[in-house]
Length: 145
Ligand code: ZN
Image (cartoon, rainbow, N blue to C red):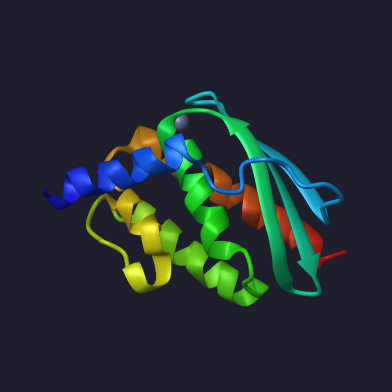
């Protein structure tokens, strides 16, 4: 199996069995983000204890890339402190902006590296970033409370 089809498999797995997809009650912050170019929507709840992300839960509809990417994001960022979460988020954004040039560091991004190929398709980048941008928004709102 080549890397490309392995990555497609990873994305499909997360799409079929998305992690943390069921909203948990009493979040610190809830946000709703929409990617109008594709029709993807996500509602994201985060629970913070000081700057620690104790929980991320979400619900949404959309294409396989948006759903799978939000699943990976939630799995990676639960249990992280804000600063570390933003570092991981920034390295995901970096591969998304690389037009396929950056493979991503699996040590940091785990299954997130499976989306590196998506960055060659400008129309799909917003799909891959939807959940991550929702998290960034929710975190910044949560930290300023
Ligand atoms: Zn999409």
